[in-house]
Length: 170
Image (cartoon, rainbow, N blue to C red; front, side, top):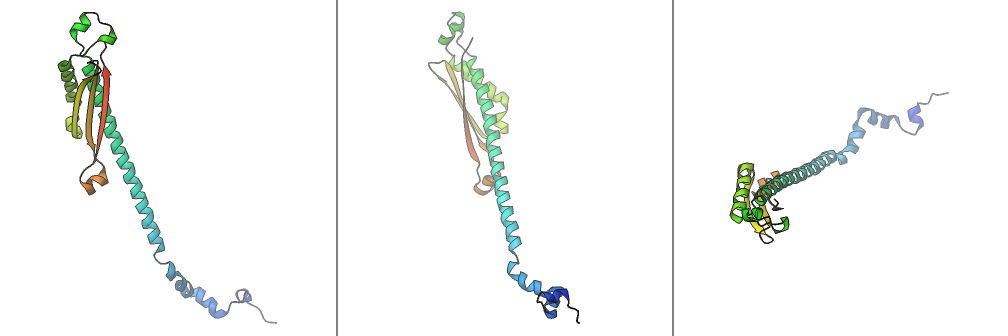
């Protein structure tokens, strides 16, 4: 009685076993997959970098918008404190208080100057006006959000504009 090798029982020959043992058989079939893992990793890195660039851009716009909103609201409130002295001394009801245009403009300008926005925000600009029959101060601020990838590719970020409003009270 002859002993049967368990590997040969499956129908494999001794010769084909030798190919598997020395790796030549495996190398011949792997050549078609060569480089596919590299492409997968590169594609994944591209998707990851795009997502990171998107998060950086959104964060930059959000931070710029929050800063502009704070500055516009502060300047509008400062301007709204400049009610006409004659209205206050005359006992006018709050609904009838009118603002002193030049004083409101000067108060808003002081508030913006104290905020330091001109030195911290790129391309910062602002404008102020009185609305609603001289009863409301409207301050509009704008600046450029520095978006890392867009700025390096296109040379300019995104302009963000915010408006703040405040009414005079005694």
